[in-house]
Length: 231
Image (cartoon, rainbow, N blue to C red; front, side, top):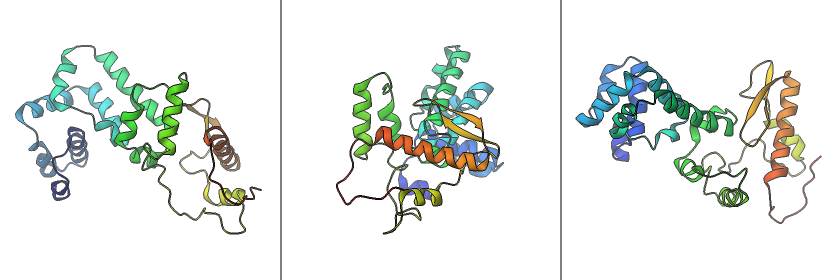
C-alpha cells in the first residue's frame, strides 16, 4: 500500500487484482486494506461479482494480462449482472482474453508487459481486412506509440558483434523458451497460433523461421547503414 500511495489513487482493475491476489494467498489483513479503498456501492458490486462463479473465472483470466483490467469499472458491475445474459458476457470476456493471448503468442512476459495505450489503440480496429487500419497501426508501432514495453530496444547478448552474422546471433538468443517439451507454437494466421508436434531441434528451428518470416512481412523500411552479413 505504501508503493500505491506514491502513485496516487489506484484504478478499479488494480484493486480487483490485489484483492484476488491476497485472497489466493490467504492474507485477509492485506486483502482488507484494498477493500477499504472501495465505497460501499463499489464494495457491494464487487462482492456480488465474486459470488458469480463464471464471471469471477472470466475476470480472473485477465490477471495474466493486467492491461486488460485497466478499463474495469466496479461501479457498473451490477448493471452487467442484472442483464442476465451470463453466457454471452462470459463468452465475450473469454474471447478478449483468447485474442490477446494469441496475439502475444502466449508469451507470459509479453502478456504481463502489455500496456494500456496499446489495448486502447487496438480496440475497434481490424488490421487484417482493413488496409487503412493496418497502415495506421503499423505506423504507430514503428513510431513507438504502441507495444511500448514489449518492443523497447535494449542491448542483449544477442546484439551483433563486429564480425557476427544475424543467423549466429539468432542461434544464441532463441532457445525455444515458453514451449512445452514435445510441441511448438506455430502461427497460422495474423492472430492465432496452434501447437504442433516438434522436438527441441524442430522447435528452435521453427521459431527462428517464424521470426524471419515476421520480419519479412512487417519491416517496411530499414535505417541506412553499412550492409550486414546475414549468413
